[in-house]
Length: 367
Image 1 (tube, rainbow, N blue to C red):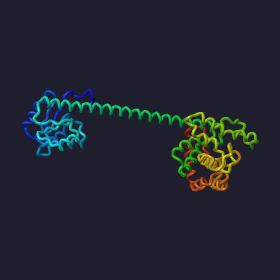
Image 2: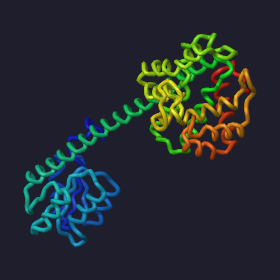
Image 3: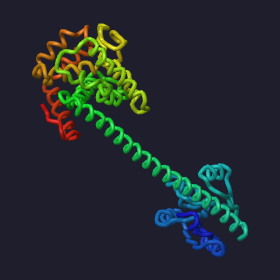
Image 4: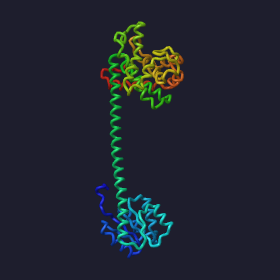
């Protein structure tokens, strides 16, 4: 019930097994009550409470069928939103204490005057009204907060989608430039994510790894075409220029608060287990785990994709090369996990990644 719709006068239930008292109490209430309902015993009272809503209940404390304490217990169990007043001519201390514990708002000692009765009912109803108003306000606040949470959640999803679309667009731009490695980033992401899950890589770190796998070559945007697309063997100076792409990529993603977590993997994705990689010659577990995972995913895609200088190799060849390079280029523990994954899984992951590339890049043609 809305606070401004609460009636100024309550609806009252009067319960007493003595008809004359029940009638007298009921006759004293019309000036301050909208409606008065009478019940001659506990059973009738409980039935009335089940079938109708009351604002205040006046009940005799002692009746043959259970009395006021039974009604109070029922109201407490059912969490009825009602003011409870007990009436008695022979109060017992223990029963009075129990009534108070059961949230009775007042105790009237018989006989009492109409003024005392009306004052007790007004006080009880005022408490009920305050309680309802406060509950309404809490519900309104809770509802408002719920709507706000839903709005924030929707905004978060929109930002995540925009973030994902931006990253994928950046990858498509790179792939359009370097045609022979089109969709390479999508396939490497798929391989790296699958391998990461096999080794129980931190769930919290998976989004970072996904981003890093997609943007690992973002630094190649600064590499001249004559080097990046050169079909012949690169000269030492050209190799040095090409190798700068990992540091350039790190610099690019560090500029964004959304991307900077991926910076270590992007910088170190060409490091080697034996320390002969670049740019920092890190060795062993000095290399971020995400970069070590990526190294295997990158090798798998590089070896199973066509290049201008050779056709794609079989996955069997990949297994042989990975074994040969365990402890040199690759983390030996990751190699064991990599080799345990069925070839059919890698094939399916590649197909799915190629489908995604085709959706995002209309110029892409799967190998």
